[in-house]
Length: 637
Image (cartoon, rainbow, N blue to C red; front, side, top):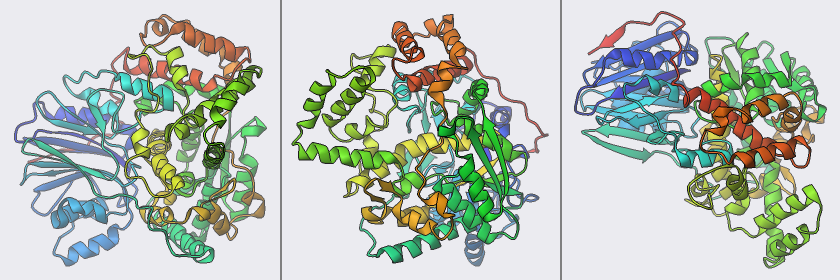
C-alpha cells in the first residue's frame, strides 16, 4: 500500500524541478512511511511513498521494464501477481524483483492498456511510457484506491493519491466548487468524478486515462453485469457463494508483515474473520470499537465472535471527546466529509496499527447483497404508491398537517417521497438534507438547489432490469465509492495501515450481482444468501441480531459534550463571513436541536465538518508534512 504523485508534460518538458515531485510525495508520507522513490525525465516526474507489505527488500518503486522505457508507480495490492508473473515470464519478460508492482509494467508491455483487465486487486497506477511519450493512469474496478488528477495551465497533467499533494505544485490555485458544496451538504460527501475544487477530478473506478501527443482519452475497461441471473437453486448458490468468499479471503492473506481484522460484531466482518481463522495456524488478531451508549454498542457481539474463533481480541470504548479529532480528520480527508463513523474508524485503525500493518474488513456486503434496511423500506414505499394509484402522497401530506411536531415532519417527508419520481424518491430517503434544508442553510446560486444532481446519473445510466439491482448499482457507484471506501482508505492510511476488503473482490462481486433478487432480499430481511452461508461459520446468537451499523450517538453528543463547540463555531467571525451560509437558518437548526424540538444532528454535523475543513484548506494554504524517513535517490533518464 502506498501513495503516488507526479506530473507529466505531453510532448514537452516539465516546467519545474524534481523537488516538486518530492514535495508532493512528502505530503502523503503517512500513506507510505517505509520508503520514497522518484523517477525523473524531461517530460515527467513520478513518485511514490511505500508501505511495504509484499517483497519488503526489493520492491522499491518506481519500477521499470527491461530497457527502462516504461516506468510505473502503484498504490495497492495485486492478488494474482504470481500467476501473472508466470504467464509473463513464459512470454519472455525478465523480472528483477519479487513484487506485485513489476507484474504491472510487464503486463502493460505485453497487453497495453488491456492489462488492467487482468489484475485482481485494488490499485491506482501511473505508467510513463517513454517510447510513446505517454502517461497512463488507471484505477481498480470498484474504486478502493483513490486517484486525483488535474490539468495545469501549461497543459501538463498532475496526479496524486490525495488532494493535499497538489498544493505542492507551483501556481496551483484551487477554487471551491459551488456544486460540490451543494452535493456535500445533501449527501455528506463530494461525488465523483468531481472534487471539492473546480478543475480537479477523481479518476472514475474501472477507467484508464491516457495522455499522449497533447490528447487525453478516458476509457472504461470493466462494467458490472446484473443480468442474466444465474440458473441456481438456493443450495447451489450458497455453496458457490461460500467458495468465492473463502477464496477472496484466502488470496488477501498474502503478506510479509503482521495482519489482523476489523471486527464490528456484524454479519460481514464476522464472516470475514471466521474465514480468516480457517486459513491460519495462529489466532486472528481482531480489533473492535464500542460506545458507552448501549444502543450504539456492538462490543458484546464482537466479543462473542472473537471467542467463537479463538481470536486475539482487542477493543476500545469511544467517548464524545473523540470529536476533538475533527481537525486531524479534515486533514486526512482533504475534502469535506460528513460521515460521523469516520471517528470510530480512525480510532480502530490507530489501535490496530499498534500491532499490525494490514487488516481485512467486511466493507461492501450491504451494497453487494442488499443488507441495508432502507432497501426493504423503499420497496414497500413503491408498493404503497402503486396500490393507491399515486394518491398516497397527497393524502399523507394532508394528514401530516394535522399532526404535532416531529410526527408532522416525518409524515410530511414520507408524503414528499411518494410524490417524487425515481430515483429522487429513493435518494430522498438516504440523503442527509432535503431541498428545503439546503435552501434554509445555504446561499447557493439558483432559487431551488438540486440535492441529487451529483448522483442521479448513477441510478439512471445502464440500469439493470430489476429495481433492486438498479439501486444496488447506484449505491455502489455513489455511497459505497465516495463514502465507505473513502472513509476506510483515509482513516487506515492515516495510521499507515493497509485495509483489504474481501467482499469487494471483483470476481465475488460479479457473482453476487447476478444472483436473483429473492436470494438477496426477502421481506424485511437482507443478505439472505449470506445469512445461510453464515450458519456454517458464526454462533447462532449473531445470525438474527438486528443490524446496527457503525453509527455514533451524534444527536446526544451535540446536545451534551459537543454543545459548547458547536455554539463557539457558529458564533465565530469565520463562520459568519464564510459566504455560503444563511446564518440565521443554521442558528435556527441549532436552537431547535439543542431544545429537543427537532433532530438536526446530521445537518449540524455537516456544517461543523465543513467549517473545520475550510479553516484548514481554504483560510490557510496547507503545509506539506515532513518525510519521516530519508528518501531514496532519484532515478533519472
